[in-house]
Length: 479
Image (cartoon, rainbow, N blue to C red; front, side):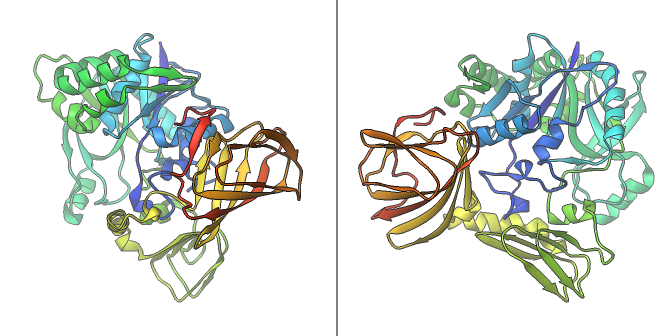
């Protein structure tokens, strides 16, 4: 029996816009420390010396759109997964966990379910609580972990604890929605309430049994989508049409809140208290709370200057940001968008994202810098009938063999060596050399070297959209 980490990486993190976006959400960002939140989650059980051995690699459930970035981030920290389960559409956490349980059902391990977008600063405290939850999971319970509250927080749901159980956990008396300030203070004073963390532990077979009995439609849809799926290297693709038919619900609503009220199921729900410096980093004010601050309570990331400012958070990605006379503010600067907000209003950032989506603005979903399986590109300038991109291709990687109907391209090599296919010819270009790709020519860019290849691409033509592309060959299974 092993402890199998399961990382749920499907959230979009809209309240952390403009850093977090639909195509590059917060779990892929290094918001705290040098590692991304996904990488930190994957390393959370390093050195675990508890009752069960930890499986060699995590099971990851993520959105199909950012599968390559997810795989690369895990590989970069030595925690590559052989089971990255791709969701063709978001259906919340209960179906996501069901897919992970189906992936693990043969060995039937104890699954430790961790959202990829949480911060935990006290790893020994985290691992201690995980070990304390294992006996209950081995006995067939579904275990959740409740955070011992440090203040009267209105932004989290709560769990009211019941009686102590023989396995060391506590019974769950009730799940409680986010309270108002007075109620939150009463919860804190009573000592009977814990923050609902979204962390779970359960045997794969137990979860599948609970889903089959409590959510039969969801269970059947997941099982059918899994059976109709396929494997592509480390990626597991479920059947898109069958998964789209699956109802959407969270682990709490679909299963946990029904356990105590269900007779005859034979599955208990329980909670283990945890004190581990936890935060779900749900909005910018939450990040300010957990970040290291200067003597005036300011938090700076990037090139930031403060003058007569207090309790202010600034993230600067592309330019220097200077702050004068600010109190309790949040400023987030990116190459294509800047957020300025009062710190106590940052929960409302999601309304900005909704407005951007309603206006079909690209800033709602994508950054100016776009990650691809072969590397990335940054659209550094554009105007009528032209666009300039900085393109970086990873060592050994290649773009698709492709053609454009409406644009021509000029390529200038800045660093590294490029292997260029241009019509019938294939040749090498070194630094400071260039080539011209006429409109309608079949072409390909590859990096045959051991260092990143960097080029400047100048596009010109009547239409410059990313959908003007016809792929003939592609290493990454894109149409």
